[in-house]
Image (tube, rainbow, N blue to C red; front, side, top):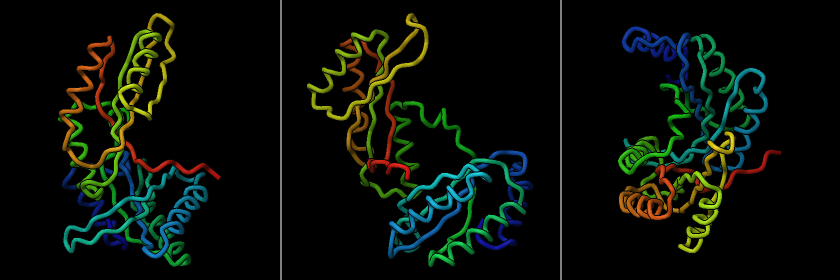
Length: 242
């Protein structure tokens, strides 16, 4: 949508008239972008401060996002302040004015604002087969994550018996999987399932994806466990909340 009221009005008109989507009635993912190449720690702290400062007005989240401009092949890390909600054009303009002023006060560049279709997080977090996972990696690349950048591959397994889950976790550790997470649902004992997530430090590339899927499926089948598929995660550990 850009930075100016005119940009925002044009974008709203385009979505309503051409895309049959009224952002005042339909939830969108709203993204406000900032940049400060000289001090990324300052940029991230600015994002945390914005989330806390406006917590009563909107459920913002912040993230540091590797960004690639295909026009001039430049790369940088941007701060994205993100919220999933409905917004009127006047509300968007107000946020843009507010964030522009705060960024200028802190010596940070406000790059602009955009929006896209809201994410179905339940669907987004569902484990994927190899083909779906490959499309997800392509989406990451299209959104600015450099190809080959570090990325955690999560192999998701499910067992219906706690003893089988424990045994399978031991088997994974023997096979060299050091980072394993265990959990279970909260159903009654008869319907309870046990989840084993094996985390691999890999990269944003499709190389080896199909082979890893086949190997995980074979291993799970041989030990009475279901291989659900892949998920992906940022390899950087989350900072503790202050």
